[in-house]
Length: 457
Image (cartoon, rainbow, N blue to C red):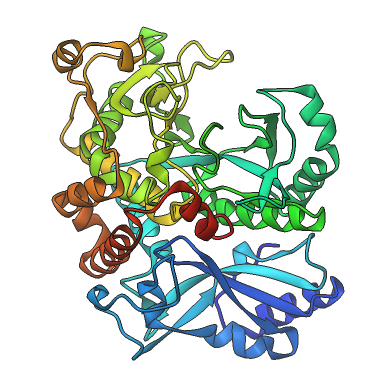
């Protein structure tokens, strides 16, 4: 459903009401994603639609100061239980939920006194997109998710993998046919184009990729994707989890971020005059991401659990480097059989414990810094950097990335470019939440992390 009209108009209200009534919708969920990347929502009955169109729903300002452990305000965030903001639905994101009979969903923008709230992650992404437009660039993106399908089990974790297969196993395809097909159908029903599917390396692990779109829609789709996979899995008696690392001996789950830069309908990534190279603007954009990557990781891999996945030789991007089709580099430039030069970039140090609006907005901001200052990323590497000696890595300008959340937070606190892009208020609240999580969980075992975080993500 798409409604291109001003909020509060009687015509739009009538159109929405009739459309939802025809679909037998009872409740409209208005969702937001907080600084801990918990997807939250409030639902309003269709009979109160007129109130929702004009004013949205109210949420306490302190919602952006809540860590993943519990619903308690982090005092250093600059927020408190005093004050309320309005969560205004973006009606262009309205969709009837194919997996929850009688419910629809819209993504909300956080507003205060009629203006975007400084602490709103979605507004931050909009600012980053606007900054790219000022440089003459349009950013297209897609999040590529890995996740586990899990059965309840009478063991220490309370779960076990849905199957015991390996990468791209056709047996896993058949064993999970019903749930995967229903996930795909539900995504398509929400106008999210499904492109590929395969069982991943971990037992019970899967990957479904969706088509790229405009940056804001890509982040909205990431919210819808997580919601859809988890809800459909529940209908099949399964738990789906995007937690980066669940089992010690099994593969971790990433959420690779694919990006391309466009201008006047033309993809700027390829260097058509020097195939198969990438363009100067693409190299500068990569250089900006690499320059800020240690700080970005507090935003793109922000969970205490994220760093159990990011290890050398695990295809997770543990080193600050880039390369063509190099799955050990933090930034991979995938080849495209339909083009003489690559057409996209892939950031591998991203997982689904990240708020997609914050992660994507920060990556865009970092890339734009590279473009603005015409940074150069150095030579692409064609080997696994984990097998290079320390002196070889130093000679190539390759260094190891943060190995825990505490290190990443320290880099973020010192990165003036990313802090400026976030804005003082959002940066303060976000860092306060991350620090609270780091201090609370830095000594936890994997089992303790999984017990708390499995159903959060």
